[in-house]
Length: 467
Ligand SMILES: [Zn+2]
Image (cartoon, rainbow, N blue to C red; front, side, top):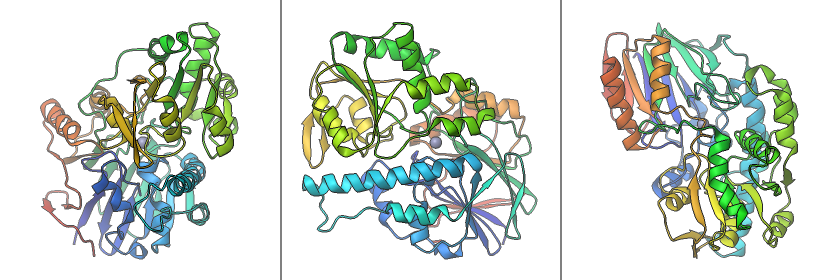
């Protein structure tokens, strides 16, 4: 048997990235993400993994976000015993992001019990903080651009992806083939991070398509943020920002700090409300070469906010009536403390709910952005009268023109390109653009599909069970 890839997640959705590569008896999993959004996807986190995890040789993580790494503690609970390879920074970020997720799941469980909102007689979290501790023992951090072997079949090299700190393009060499996982591709001209590396020798490309049908506005993040929040602060409202409190927080804080310094917005307090610590200045010092933004400015931005950790302090925020900015939750408002803030502040028309990322279909973020007048939180419907807006210039994904520009600059000629990690319309649109631009053969794989890869042959095989 030759080499095959099975798409176990991260196709026709931006969540649950899991790509199984197999050569002979050896199998590695690229990414081990959580599913989010629509119920039929979320329930997959609770289903048995579609193969025995003990048969995996290793896991390679492209980056530390939950959609890419958040299932890992569960995989280990289910019997995975091998190593988890990723960049040094991803290893460090995973210890924060996975702990943060365990903490948020625990708080959500407390809320579910308190509001009697769970349909399960004995609700429990997917994993706990102790499970995360155990999973961290499996990690092995790797340097950029240094190849390493996995088993007898695979040689892997991590290249800079520019998406978040530590994010990698994963190039796998196996049986003479070069297979590149783009993971999530960063912006070409990001204010914080460097542009993604260029890679030319690629036989098969697995390419993300989050913004496969969208262009980001040509705006400075500061300008877009100021335009969005100025009116709310003038009418003494509260701004709730649904954002990653780890990966992209610093650019958001930097933009707010600059706006306050230039007196372009009122000098209101900024609270970062998260049940586990966020990325500290030390981590930026350590990976200074991976950034464009000077360290001094990152430090000023980090120091400009107040950090809330205890649930009691978070509750006290909701009793405040003065204008303020609260940054909380994830980009999709799926869980965590932001839900309580939405219940309190979302009902008042003078407030603003601001999204900074890409809320996938079926999430509260997607519902709010499609102008839902009410949303379900903790088992009850809450009216939403606050303004709802989205900032696109803070995105840490390349849009379709940047993806095309990156592909052109790489001068690669893949035999086949698999369009993944996108909503169906976005993937279809990117496929069309790449076919028109480069005349490459592109495929939008289905969930569970196995595809055999060969230098000259290409076969597809629908499959839900992997032996
Ligand atoms: Zn990502």
